[in-house]
Image (cartoon, helix red, strand yellow):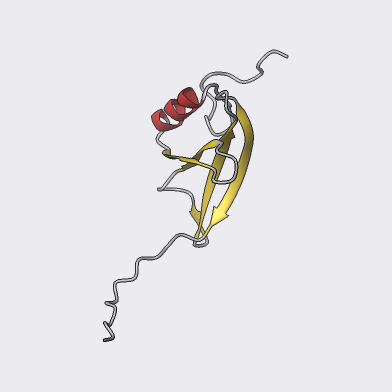
Length: 95
């Protein structure tokens, strides 16, 4: 099947192969990209979000691309999480 998307479409919609190209296209588009590895089966993944726009009602929206061992996208997920709020209170030391 011929690719129906143009190259200039939002990289969160368009899937690029391999993982390095996907990461580069997302970074160029201004998204924050964080790489990691799944603990249970060692698949690589990247979490992608726009820190300026993706907080809605106190929740952070992320898109997660999970890659198989060959660099091909295995799964694409949309994740919503509550951002961590820094706690500036000092801990009391108990002796």
